[in-house]
Picture 1 (cartoon, rainbow, N blue to C red):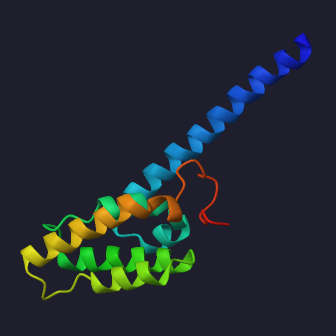
Picture 2 (cartoon, helix red, strand yellow):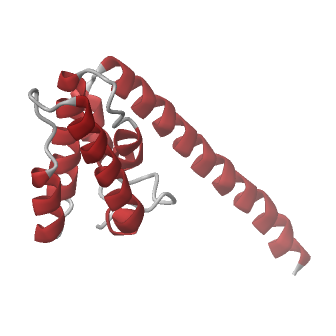
Amino acid sequence: MRTALKLAIPLTALAAVAWSGTFVAWNFRISRAIRNNERGVLRAAGCRALPSLIASLMPDRRRTFLADVHRLIVDQVAGSGGASRDLEFLKEHEIEATDTIDVRTRKCREIQEWWRKNHDFYHQEWRVWSSRCRS
């Protein structure tokens, strides 16, 4: 029994360190990719990028940035087997170059509210090793 316990404690600690390292590494990578508009990295990150993409929807940012982020969100939701009602909602809230600041503010706020209600379906924080959270 003592031998099993002596083995279990370091293995558990090693697993915790590995998980934490993966989590932190992906968060840094995703944050940098959003800052530098690296679409390839964000696509590769899959569902792991969704929380940061949603959080980056700030109405005072450049319209092209918001449109790119919105497109990435729609692609990730569609790629994860998103419900048609969610895809329809996101398409209705597409951020366009002609949107005024008031319209962008409303769309960003409503998308973030949608995420608060639906995030568990599209992303589980603890699954840092997979870009496909629903698999």
